[in-house]
Amino acid sequence: MRRTNNQDSFSVITAQSKERFENRGHLFIVADGMGAHAAGELASRMATELIAMNYFRGSVEDAKDSLHVALAEANSEIYHRGQQNPEFHNMGTTASTLALLPTGAVVAHVGDSRIYRLRRGVLEQLTFDHSLVWEVQASGQVHPDSALGQALPKNVITRSLGPNADVQVDVEGPFEIQLGDKFLLCSDGLTGQVDDVEIATLLDCLPEELAAEVLVDLANLRGGPDNTTIVVVHVTEGPLLDEKTAPPPTRSEQTMAFWGTLASIVAFVLSLLAVIGFWYLDNNVLMVVTLLGALISGVIAATSLSNLKAGSRRIRSARARDAAAVPKAYGGKGPYRRYASSPDRELFDRLGQTVEELRKAAKVKNWLMEWGQIDQLQSRGSQAMDVNDGKAGILCQAKAIVETMQQLREQHNRSAGETAIDQ
Image (cartoon, rainbow, N blue to C red; front, side, top):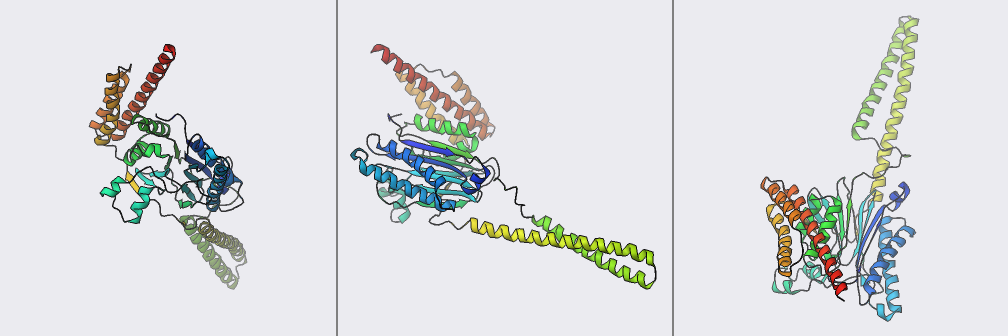
């Protein structure tokens, strides 16, 4: 709402093949640039392009290590570009990168843009803010509620890509991925205006597209002092499987195979004993029939025993593969903070207050706003809250916010048109 250019950049690159997914997964990046003139815009755009290129074209096999190298190489390129042109000197950018892999979610991060994961109504911040506030609080020397803690500037970052030849990259994960998980990548244009509980609730209650739209609108309705960029990722399908490799048997399948093998062996032994008995009784017909049964039981037992051993080998192989593919996280201690979704009356009213403040401003400035649909949405939302249907209430309030922002844009466009005519 206050800047003439957008210094944020983002990239969404989903795997288009099974091989690509298994090797590099899906990649998501949000970057927030800083610097005079167009330096910040250039730095963030370079970050998203270079990180993706270095990650997918890199020779490092392990995806986690490759992501770390990709950010380090991007930093080097941005730094050298800044040194070549005085206008771009000391330009920098944050970079928050998420890779969704068969082994889990891996995060590589520099700066104060954030990555969250929402699971069953709980929002977890997977990244550590490289800001003065977070660094001082993490040191334990200053209490957040103290006078000094409150006086610390919230917009000072301690680490970014570009200003220095080398940068320390935080690598977190792999974090477990479950069906229904939502991941949110965002610049601080969002988190500076919308608190974490609001983010958790809106992300939990709304479809992804509406959640992204209302979060940006809410940040802008509250002043919009910075660019706001959001990427929402929803896990709706399980990991891709290699159809050429049989999956290891489950515990129940392995148990059934064991008892089936044991039964076949017992049948084989009993058949052999019966053959010996009929031979002593000189009953050739029964002896031949029983001998055929013994042979069949023996073949079944041998096959079952072979399958049982193969299943055990696949289980051991899968365990060894998983152990090798999911190493312990290095340099990461996330999640760092947790917030519960709270679709209650208090949050409903807080969201509505933003709309009410704009309504008051519209009356003072004589804006041509149509409030009928907004009033209806808020009324339906209030009725839903009265019957304890919090998610439906928040949904209506979110739609009211989107409609309000749309009205504001139309008002802005009309004002711009009238100014152009007057000139």
